[in-house]
Length: 96
Image 1 (cartoon, rainbow, N blue to C red):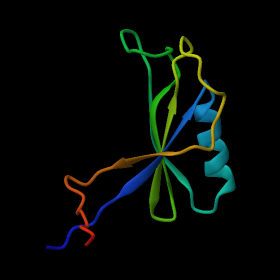
Image 2: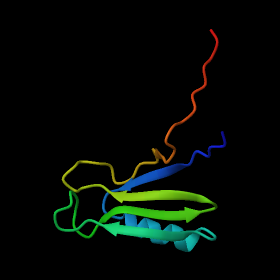
Image 3: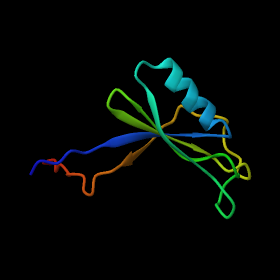
Image 4: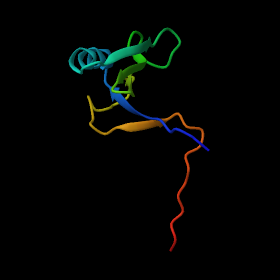
């Protein structure tokens, strides 16, 4: 079975995700903003902030999101979450 697993870095910000995306797109060679979706009326987030943003760079996708201001979150953290598009991730069993 030929299966490709894609993992995307997922960066969260406290209100400046779009600014970060535009900085990376202007600074990194061949980086491109693929999409930005904003929080709107009725969404669980701050209206006008980034609900989901995608930036491509060197064959990889980096996802961006603004955290809701009602939550006490750090301004930015170098801790990164990963999002998998794979339906199943193969498991490796180790002998004892």
